[in-house]
Length: 304
View (tube, rainbow, N blue to C red):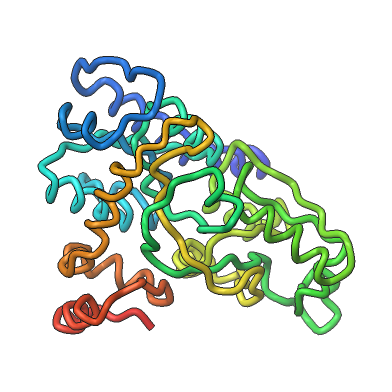
C-alpha cells in the first residue's frame, strides 16, 4: 500500500511533469534561431512573424482540455497574434521570476499572464494597458467550530502568521504593506517549485495553512476543493496587465508597447474569448469600454 506522504508528493509532481513536457514539446517544434539575448522591439517581432510568449500552466491562463490547448490568457494572446498576422510560440513556466528573466533576456516578447500594475512594477516593467481587474485573497481551510485557532476571520488575525506565495510574486509587497497597516509582522515564505494552484491544493490537503493568490485562480480552484475558504481579501481590487518589456535593460522601445495598447482598444477583443472562460471568471472584472460591454451582452457573457 502506498503511504499518504508518497501519494501527496505524487499529486504535486504531476502538474510539474505536465509543464515540463509542454516546455520540451514547444521548444522542439521547428528549428528556430536562438534569440539575440536582449528584448526585441515590435518591428523585429513583425519581421520574424513570431511572437514568443511566456505564461503559467493553470486552469485559467493556459491548460490542455482533452486534446485542445485553451485558457483565458492563451486565447487573448492568440487573438492579438491573429490580428497582427503573427504566429505564437508559447512556453508555460511556473516560476514568476523565470518569466521575468526570460523577458529581460529576450527569450520572450510578452508574458501572457496578468500581473498587478503596481507603482513599483511600473518603474521596472513596461505594461500593456489594463486588461482586467482582480485582487489577491487568502486561501485557508474552512472554519471547524468557533474555537478554530487557525481560521483567519479578519486581516488583523494575520499577525505572526506565515503566508505562502509563489517566489517573486507581486503579492509580497502587498503583504508587507499589510503588515505595516495592522502594526505587526506577517511572515512570508516564498515557494519556487509550485504555482498558485499547487499552493491552493497544499492548503486544502493540510500541508500548509495559508497561501495568497489571485482571486480568479482561487475561485476556479474552489469548485473542486470545497474545503478551502477564500473570503478574506489581502488587497483591494487592482489593475492587471501583461508585461511586455523590462525597463531596467535600458533598451525600451515604446513603439512596441503601442502595438499592444492599440489592440487593447479594439472593440472585438473580448468577444474573441470563449464563453467557457467568461463563466469561470465570474468575478474577474474586465476593463471595458461601452462598446465591449455591448458585445459581451449580445453574446450573453457577463462579468459581475
